[in-house]
Image (tube, rainbow, N blue to C red; front, side):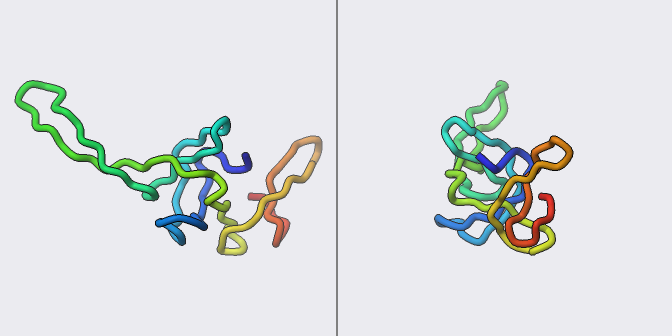
Length: 101
C-alpha cells in the first residue's frame, strides 16, 4: 500500500469524492485508510461518569485505499506514486513531476 499515516490524500471515488484530508490511520492488511473529515459516521456514546449525559459524536470510518490518491504539493492535485532508489534509500515520487512526496 502506497498511502501511509500523516499523508495528504484526495478522495477520488464514493460519496466524499473531491474532498481531501490527512490520513489518521492506515490498515495495510485490509487495504483501508481513515481520512480526516471523510466518511463521517455517527456514534452514540454512553455516559461514562454518573451525572454525565450521553452524546452523539461524528467519527471518520475507514475507506478503501484505492478510493484515494496521494496529494502532490507541486502539481496541486492527486497523483500516481512511483518509487526511486536514491543513495540506497527507497523514496516515493510523483509520477508527473518526479518530485519526492
